[in-house]
Length: 293
Image 1 (cartoon, rainbow, N blue to C red):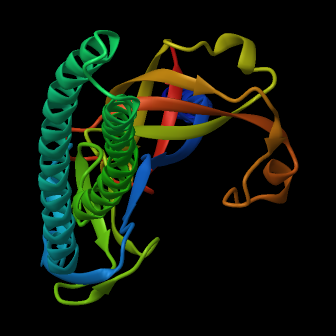
Image 2: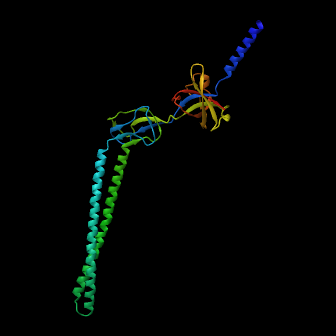
Image 3: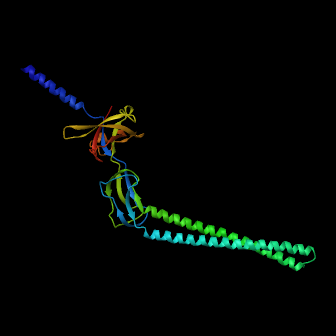
């Protein structure tokens, strides 16, 4: 009977030793790359779709800022552009008239010079027609130089329209990435301001388990390596997930303060990110364990 008790005791002790040795290679918490969406212009929010928990795709509209003033400014600038375009057409018509007058004057000039060579015209007549031709040529040249001023004026208006259009585009705030809205910092009807945060979002389809490994473990950890990730199921059991090492820090650091014991906090470790696909069970900040295969 004593031998049976002794055998049972050895089995229990062996199991206890085995369970004590079954510790994970590294520990940490899940995190995601969070993006803060801010306004670039000031104005009243006339549309806001920043409900927490909403899943958005890249390009989805998150908010719209009142842009009526900018729209009116663009219309005014476009009207000025149209007026300058008409002015340019009129100037071109005036030059065409002057060119026709110059053509007629040159025909007359040839006749007068021919008559003068035949002694049938006076020097005064020659001087008059020559002067008339020079005046018309100068007028045409003067009118043509006005195109430079008109073109410069149009370039200024085009730049102003482009600037106003840029402001108009910025009044529609879109999501730059796929993700889930985690927090909102404003409400519909409130005033937005440059650099004022509107929402925070992150892609929760994959989370990173940031763990820390010692220098002894580091040679056995490689980018692309498969990792067994464990999360709590209940007080005694874990759930197993698959992960892949996506990043390894190149510099050592002291163990973060979230580690409870002082012995662990003073150790130098390397941060490692393990990317894990999220089926809905993973949450930002949740603790996890990693076993490197």
